[in-house]
Image (cartoon, rainbow, N blue to C red):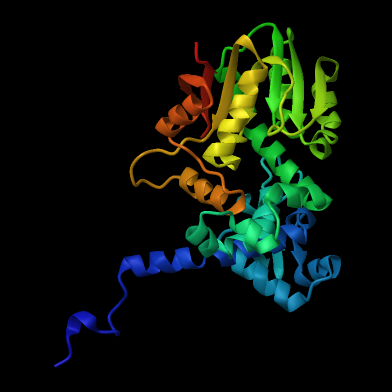
Length: 345
């Protein structure tokens, strides 16, 4: 007699459906990617359009595009309001390039470079090295330095990410009323600009790779802080760094392993004033088994750069290896915390 507990005709358990949903995650990512790449949400901003209209504008094959939008509509992204005629939904609004919380740049990064790199995840697990290097034959930041379009999208993602959290970050810390703030790896300067706007007595130094800081002028000018900010191109692995009183490292340290992270912090400590401070702004890994986007971000760092998200204790140890002492960790209303450090006395 067959064992009824192993019957293949019985309804699958709930976890079977949950696992299938996890398995299909990459398909949804790619559907979102092509929708952004084709600019579908922008085309629907003024109202619904037929599939033939969308296909003609995007140079897509009408039936294939219809099937893609129908699939996205099943997740609440777009809505088929009449046969082969689609409209925006609240989720689809986030795929517009002009939305204040647009995720277009982030989706392009995940659907292009990151998607291919994640295909080599097993390489990272077997070696501890970034899968990106295996997929592209060079480190991520070297790739960006040689691919202007990818670099522009990446920097836009970082700027948009900063814009969504900058108010909370600036208000969470008691910045000094005077002195020089050095934003290390500050991209186009969105965070530094917000700090300088809020504190008129401060001066700033934006420090990043030369090809990155070259694109910072519009951000600094729009904030009205260009007269108080110097742009310096360089490499934080090659001291000396610009002198200053307060050093900001927002989502920089997570890009690197412990040895290189310690070197960056040490170079900052060597350049800063005797009573200076270092602020590392990162999402810390929580304890326990509860779901956390930071744990997935940790894997993203392994795959893309060989870096990592860290726990509070891991930051305490990292600071110590760099000749710093961890003064305090300030939570914010975002996923980020401010890890404040100073030289060991």
